[in-house]
Length: 112
Ligand SMILES: [Zn+2]
Image (cartoon, rainbow, N blue to C red; front, side, top):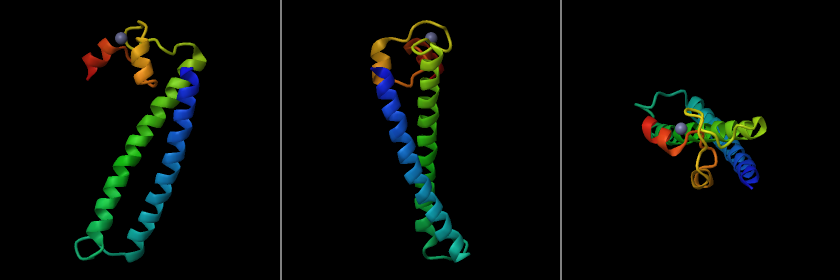
């Protein structure tokens, strides 16, 4: 069932986000511990690039978690599988490929 798949995906994403948050936290500690600005700290650039890489990952995970949570809410509210823009059904193929999709393929193309 799609619901089970979404639920599993949501849990998985939350777990990954938790790990990532912990890493970001550690990294923040590492950065603030030195009290140095990156320009003069030999460790700085490494930490900086690692930080921006993980911040990017974190943002992308958050987006996915939000999308999956919204999809689960739509399932609960009975609106899952309906395009949030035009109100037409989202194709099953699309939902299977992207369970968290809230736009039909036509609307997704329009807003892309
Ligand atoms: Zn649509």
